[in-house]
Length: 106
Image (cartoon, one colour):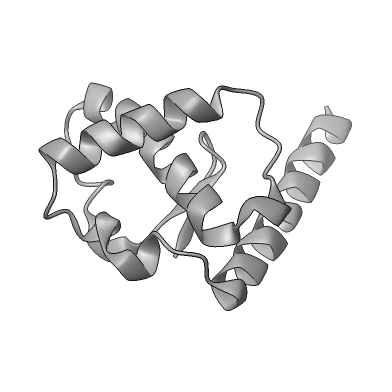
């Protein structure tokens, strides 16, 4: 699992998103992986991103319709999991701290 900075979400190595050549597809999947992360971390861990959750969900459902066999839609990666949620939230906290530190240096 790896933190994706632009969406603030996570991807797994075997999902193939880094190998995609189309930046349009990658941009669209940022909404997909962000919504998926909200499914994994659960409603009590609102990730606090300033954008439409309804839009993210709509893009997620559309992608699931057109790419139903993508490993990223496996039930284990799209369901609440307290252990993975805790790990994601800790990684996000460190990423946020590092980003703030970088801003403070400049």
